[in-house]
Image 1 (cartoon, rainbow, N blue to C red):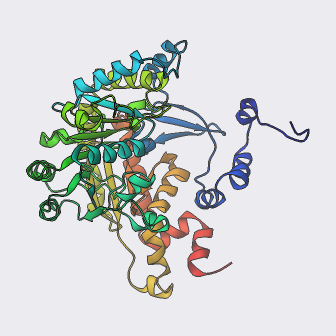
Image 2 (image 1 turned 90 degrees about the vertical axis):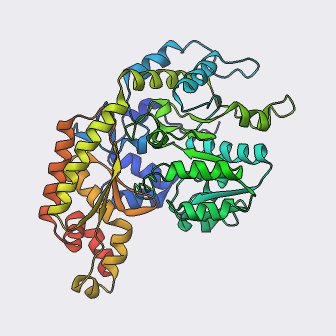
Image 3 (image 1 turned 90 degrees about the horizontal axis):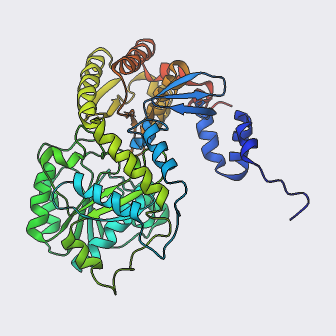
Length: 464
């Protein structure tokens, strides 16, 4: 080893300052990301987390209303999941020359709680991998190649998942993507039927609610209609419940609101209890057997770390805790209260143009700037607000009120409110009061920019 080499230890990391982390990110990871997060002071150093709460290095307590984009339905470091990991600590974690009892048990449990006859599970490590598995499964099971997806969709950023993610900002730099993928408007059953009527579509992949699209809720009955159309033309219906699953929308799975059983279900995020990375592609015996139902095909799609003992042990503990605590019911009740109160704020504040969502997956959309201020800045305020007004509101919530939120990737003019399902009404009221104060104090886009940071305003006006 080089005598001048220094390897950091975990003890070193535990003693880092906020500046230490910034410097390492800029030197060894993603300098532009570090700069972007620093713009609105989003690069705080958090040192402890439990339930709904997170502590920074100065011992300030924050409420987490982002919930790791739906990965923290049970909150931070849930005791039941940590206990499950502890129970599995002496078992072999990776041993491919065997069958894993923990993985088999979690597959069994998923078959009990998922809709209809979904029964066969492939375990992987993330939501994007679950989508990759679904796309491959649909092609091999149907013998077709085309995939239909929705504008505004977000299914991941690996090559296959990116090919069915509906925002050109993420797709264009990596073109050409996987061929045969076609985008249609979300919620448009006529457009779906027009594509599927050609008889060559392997799968239609859809989110019951578009999370990154800006928490877009489709028209009532859309998913059921999509199920009917897919069945008519022999196309597999792939439902992406990576963000909406495990109680988030008021049902264990959002497709249950319309009594829909997909052919393939993609899961991840809260399946790992917010502690372990795990994804799952769940399908029917019929589809599985067409895809991988022989010894010649059994190893066509595999993953070294997929279904490792610790990940699936966390999954068993997390799923049991979600069911035992009846978190879907809690999400429905608390979400209804939250949305009703947010709509009252919308009536009071002009900057809020829409409140939408289901359960505890809620989007708050803001007005775009207009008039004299935008003309004076040659459209700079408008351009900036389209990308960053959600971030400015989130910055105010974080820095002034110690509430963690974020904007949605495919619609940055929307902030998501996606707390762990264990959130209390009192904590919801804290967020409502904070939002009321922010929009009472900042009644225009320029006021919001001024309140957020001088750096933002300087960039808007072209000053150094």
